[in-house]
Image 1 (cartoon, helix red, strand yellow):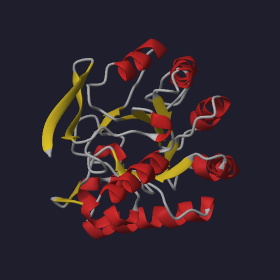
Image 2: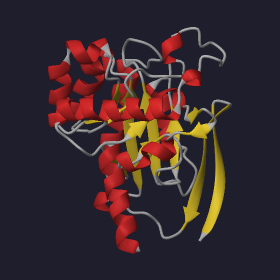
Image 3: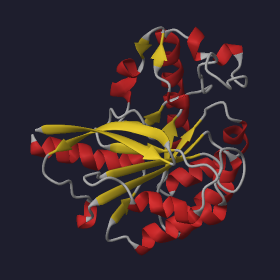
Image 4: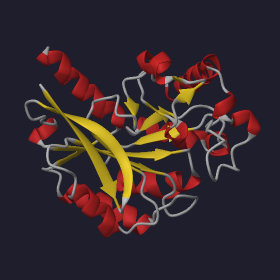
Length: 260
């Protein structure tokens, strides 16, 4: 097996570093060469108001990495549960969204949610508690995780090592498959979203896009741009396999087991 290290640049910024394994070409369901995972972080109102209705209109499934303590989870619990029943994944994004307050522009991080002050035991307990909460919402025991702010270092150690067995996969850290590309688009057009899909490096089999707000909230893209991307993916459904991240990775994990 030959491994090739790839750096991906988008608009001049390094957004992902990942490793491609040069083996037999991965074929997704329906013989499609490319999988696309659309996900949405933080449990925001605009996701319920605009993103999920658009996904449902195009019959596409996605992953929503929700926060257990989000007021939007509490106020609109029935809508999140209904989204899960329609095939969307409620993924684990922790309880309190702890991030490092020592990094630039992190004035918004509360002292009691400062990842720099966490212990490994504390973050593991928080993630485990979030899993218990989500099971109470959707009744499911299989899901995926994405780390708040993409930060995984606690007390000098990578805490993913302690929670890996609790999830089908962990998104955004290059640990789940070795070939995923991660992009967090903000204030881009539909054309830019589509161009991104079209311009991935040769050999990439999975595209990961993580949205926040859609048509509102923060770090947002317009609902028009979002819908234009969905229309493109559906119009090219013979090429792109779009599903929740948990379903994508369950399929990939089965292929790996079958090839052993």
